[in-house]
Image (cartoon, rainbow, N blue to C red; front, side):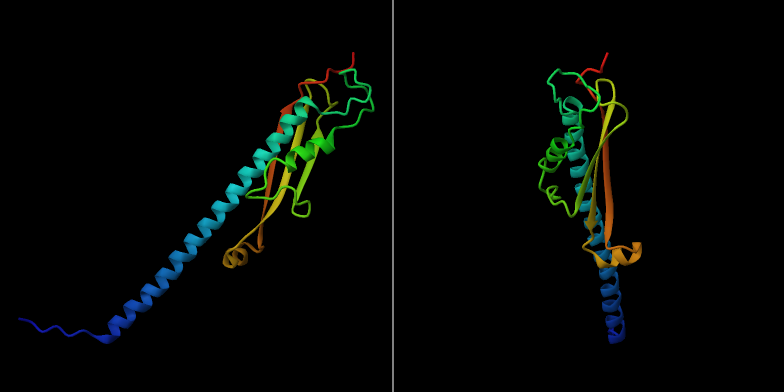
Length: 158
């Protein structure tokens, strides 16, 4: 029967290796969770932009004379489209917070049937892992989402 002697220095070395490895693994895991939440926020932004573009495709203008046709000078229905985007969700991003979320609405041509409307939503996602912010040089990740839809109504001028 052999008598094994344990070297106390080897036990300490194993403990240090475990601590360093565990630190690296937990940092990678926390970074993956943070980036996963950023992706989840991006999906919410994209869905909100889609909601605004869908609404804008059927009501892109304020029809001032109620003739269901675009007349030169009728304004873009920006206020209601932006309102639709901002009210579409409150989690994981509070879209109603105008200091953190920007929304813009543009049209490619005249805002009538056959044209296109683009709704863009931008949010600076705050990183919770300070180490990732130090690596990329910013404590936030800019998340832009943009959706373009075809305008369905009103009809274009003759």
